[in-house]
Image (spheres, rainbow, N blue to C red):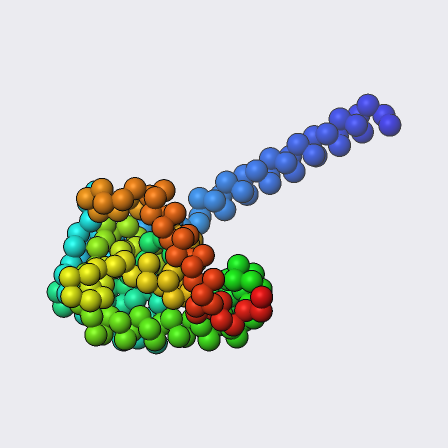
Length: 226
């Protein structure tokens, strides 16, 4: 290609590029600026009922609260009224049998743990466990002990529940569920109040209750083939 023709092509290309750049600048300047952000009010996180509470170093003890009957209650998950406010508490240390198929994976896991029990055996025993706890807490004084340790992504809190089973005799609800063959040792643990018992020794106690329930064919164990 002759030198003059090459030079002409380069000049035309440079002019076209310059036109495109100038058009882009003019278009950008003609666009409206960004819309100003609307201020968003940040809610004040209260420590009142229904909102997150501060985790306590020591247990708070609530004597003689009231069980609130609810279809969502299970043996280890209970709606309880304290000083006029309702809270949902989940027991430390134990996992009670599921009373429905709302969580099929949990039912299947419990079935494998309890001697390959069927889904029906698990949920039937779970319903029995929930009815047992409802009757127990409706007819016996009990205390709730909580540090307000919250279960992730929920409005529920871990707690210990102590029941006065007979005059002057108090037992953890977790122990009673283990004795009845309605639960397994599973979940979140905690230091017991006032150093009454350390975690390892209490876990041994719960496992001992579990073995006794199995030997006596209590609860779910009555529905499992040997």
